[in-house]
Length: 120
Image (cartoon, rainbow, N blue to C red):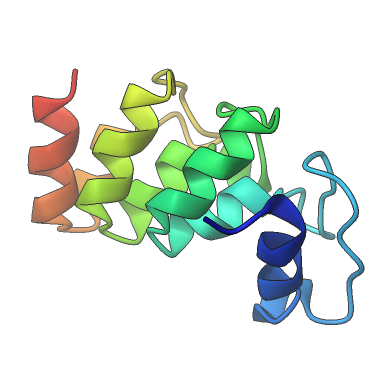
């Protein structure tokens, strides 16, 4: 299993984190996103689990008021949606007033909608 430092180095190669030196689970980029937002957007369950186990806030608020659960729903990552719910992610309205389920529905992300509605 990978450790958190390896995950940080991998995230530093993601466009919104290029040139950043991530040194903490609470680290945010210029948009307010944490490492957990990024791995959730990519649907990386192992990295999400390691991050939450190491102390990442599963309900951290980032860009547009998105939580990691919103990121998984937005990117149509159904396994990530279910996994984050199992890790304790709550339903929180983003800055546009939508829940992760509503966000996935508005984007036509049927797999995330189905996963999200099944994990409630």
